[in-house]
Length: 184
Image (cartoon, rainbow, N blue to C red):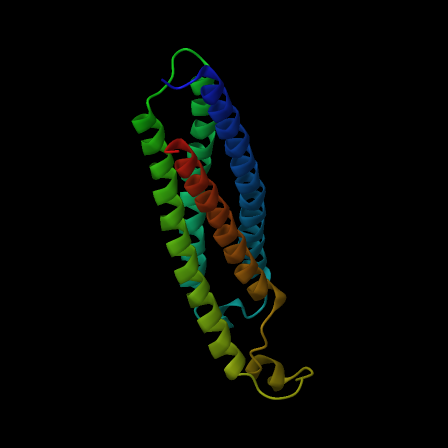
């Protein structure tokens, strides 16, 4: 029979790792939502905002990855609650806990997929835009409208995608570690 000390260690481990996962994803999620909002507001204020070639699909996939990150945050909170429950007398079964961790694992895999495809879309459209640039710096006049220089706002969209990708990677690694810990 499993010793009470083992349940206490498992409870502390689940709670601690659940909190680390939760807060790391919250911080990265706040960065992502801030950058996406800034990109949306700033993109509408910029002159010639229609010249950006194809950033829409990449930003849409980044937004989808963010929505999946919200579900993953909820799963992280449930992991913390499960860790508390394991320390009490009303313990969830190993199967229930494993199902919870696997749901979080699948959510993070889905978010990683959306973020990776979004990253490829953003990088591809910025590459096409960079390859269409005219050499040199255009100062005023007609040359400025023809030059498709990559702006900091467009690079910020890549940053938001990288942040959501990293948040899902953190969730995935913690879920795998906790799942391994439960079956040990």
